[in-house]
Image (cartoon, rainbow, N blue to C red; front, side):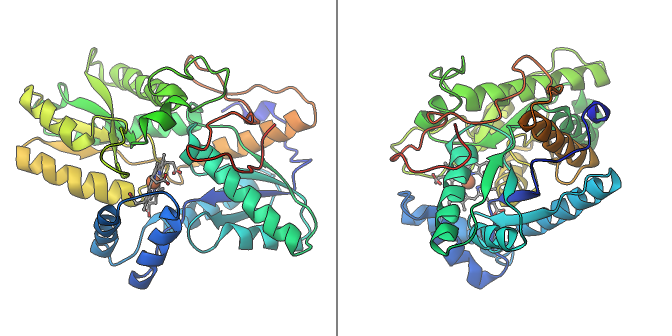
Length: 378
Ligand SMILES: CC1=C(CCC(=O)O)c2cc3nc(cc4[nH]c(cc5[nH]c(cc1n2)c(C)c5CCC(=O)O)c(CCC(=O)O)c4C)C(CCC(=O)O)=C3C
Ligand SMILES: [Fe+2]
């Protein structure tokens, strides 16, 4: 890591907010949680009933909140151990602790400039702007309550930061080791992420992003870049060149007549099997922790499909609270703080796309329904 070159000075910021999706923690939470997630989004009732079943299969508890508690503790420990005296708070979009309550706490604790780490590494409406709209809504509520004004900035997309990519390389190598030895060297890598509507993918990214308007937009271009970086590092570590890999999708919702990114991981496993592939590793590069989309859609549904086909599969772990990731967050905080102070610093990124912008443009990753106020933009 290059953090030694960035001064350990968090001014002008006085708090970091870990902002996440949230999930139910008891059976009676499941329906209200799904109502929060899908309000005004036109998700068919049948799909909601189906997704509800996924949660009930796990006792009505999503692992996501516990994973965020672990990340919060790991960030605090990393900061404390490296002389970064910046309080870290946690709030969610869809479940307690709710974002608005956490922001109120931040304001009443006397903080004014808040940096936000969203648990989503890539560009796109769902992973970026929607969180910024939620921030704008929460700030409006605090203003109505007469609380002092907070200024909120969001950390840049971290998909190509070495502290995010390197743990995924190791996780892919570990998953390959779980496969039968005679299938290992010819096993495919199936990189997976959340499917989103084609139109949302195409409009993802900054207006001047070269990927914008191309099929899949910045969302797909960024995932392809991470997939390539992981595949190349795995080739180097294993000495196996030319291993096939693909970017595939999971967790589609929405109405069937609206096109979403494909192929689905389960269809992909079928194609691999039909084409004679001996095994596959599923690498969930689109997610930062092993939450429900990973535990159900991959570990339950896709594994069942693979078992039915007789295709050996393994699943790589997500980054979670890996110390390299918490160090990367620290580095990103210090990088952004230095930039705000006008101090030039190295902006660490692997691969060809370079470090993302710090501040989103008004036309970045537009809302697919109608424009709404969003925080942390130009
Ligand atoms: C890009 C993306 C990410 C990754 C970036 C990020 O992390 O933000 C993500 C993460 C997550 N999505 C999650 C859960 C759900 N997403 C849904 C619905 C949707 N997701 C979408 C996209 C994404 N989603 C979209 C375009 C929809 C359609 C409705 C809409 O336009 O909003 C629904 C509704 C039911 C259904 O699945 O149809 C649920 C329950 C959980 C929590 C898991 C847990 O509980 O452990 C997490 C981390
Ligand atoms: Fe989702």
